Length: 116
Image (cartoon, rainbow, N blue to C red; front, side, top):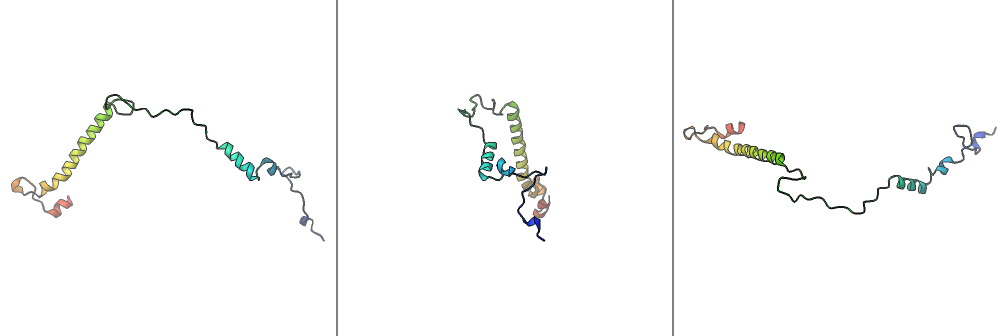
């Protein structure tokens, strides 16, 4: 017997009709059609005719649209003050701890200071 499946038969759609290369008609298999469709779908908008330079505040220092107002200056100054106190404590404490008790220090050894 001859196998009928070995003969070239037309492809069938889901509907049972012959497939007439619908994919090729839609451009799904064509590289040129695929590249042209992706180019149009991802096209960036044209830039505006003139691009204005960034705004620069020419007013008093600490005042303006760039974020520097009375509240930000106060917060920055408070942070700087507290940071200076913390740094000072970190630098002075080992000296105070090593100083002898007779001179008003804590008289600690280097090992004990490192443990603190």
